[in-house]
Amino acid sequence: MTAFRRLASLLALAGFLSLFVAGPGSGSRAPLVIAVEGPQTGSQAPNGIDQLRGVRLAVGQLNAHGGLWNGQKVVIFAANDRAEAARGKAVASRVIARGIHFVIGPYNSSVGLANLSLYRRHHVLPLWMTSDDKTAGLGATVQPMNSQLAPIEARYVEGLHAKHVAMLVDDTANGAFTKGMADRLQADLVKAGGSISWTSLREGLSSAYYAKQVSRVLATKPDLIYVSTYFPEGVQIAKALAAAGSGPPCLMGLANVDNSFLAGTTLSEAQRCVFSGVPAPTEMPTATRYVSRYRAAFGTKPSVWGAFTYDSARILFRAIDRARSFGFAKVERPLRHTKGFHGATGTITIDPRTGYRKTVPVSILEVSDQKAFVPAQ
Image (cartoon, rainbow, N blue to C red; front, side):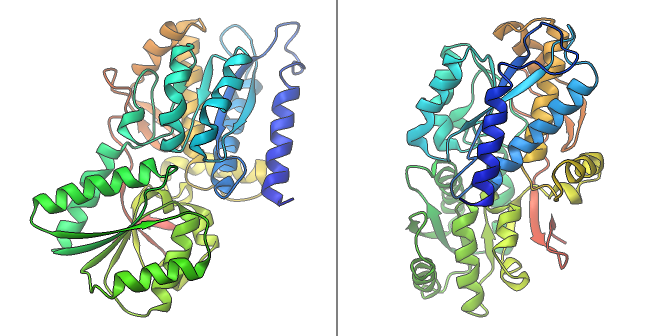
């Protein structure tokens, strides 16, 4: 059993037990249970564990200061979907069966396409972490959406004056987000008169498979390589590109912006591409306290998306306090009217019409010599 799998199992067990055991000082009132859904095991486990830890920090802070407006404490139910769309409905059904009314997640758009409508039909209010615009609806998100990311990628590519772009895309059943981003960029570039070659990638295969696909793409002599995958595949592609030597510039999508991408690559491999995404919390001035608390609690530096689940939990708790209720509609209203909230990921204002964050901290990133994701110079 891997360290991540052991940790995920322990966290899930702790969440399960806490459904029945109220914390110190909570009296006889049962705690409020919130679900955190994400890939807590499987190839994307580092990402899911980081997201779970972000919520754990927010819950710990809330409970240490007396809990919600009525003194009620909060506990977490860890809902593990393994980043697999086929598991989405079953995971949501377990959350619904437990009478849970709030969920932070899911993260993967393919999973959200499968189960967010189920949550909403059963009045479970989501703070979704998906980015595909098709997953939008009731609830809210602090996460950047495809329609907010795509213009940044298009401007970058247009600035390179790239006429032929070779795309390496995870367009499998679990790749709704990665395919959606590639679709948007392709449409923008074709409209501007560019040409596109599209290479479909499968997940979880050998390094030789990815090296072969990269070699084929390089043989077409593109002006730019665009990589729209999740980080496990991105690691293999970065290695293959670096091994091939000098070549065209490379842009990787947001789903590769993760500490595990950095851990799986050498510095030169990680620096072979730039990325669309958000900086690591260690590079965000607004996240200084979050980083310090995270290190103290978990003995390691945070990855990217735990800061977003941390902020998601905090704006949820504020909305519950303002509503003085746990009702779906009563909490959703103040949630979608969040304005000027000072989060770890920056100031958060939610558009009440869409539930989207109005300003997202997205830019083109590079990997620094200290091996961190930072805004490109």
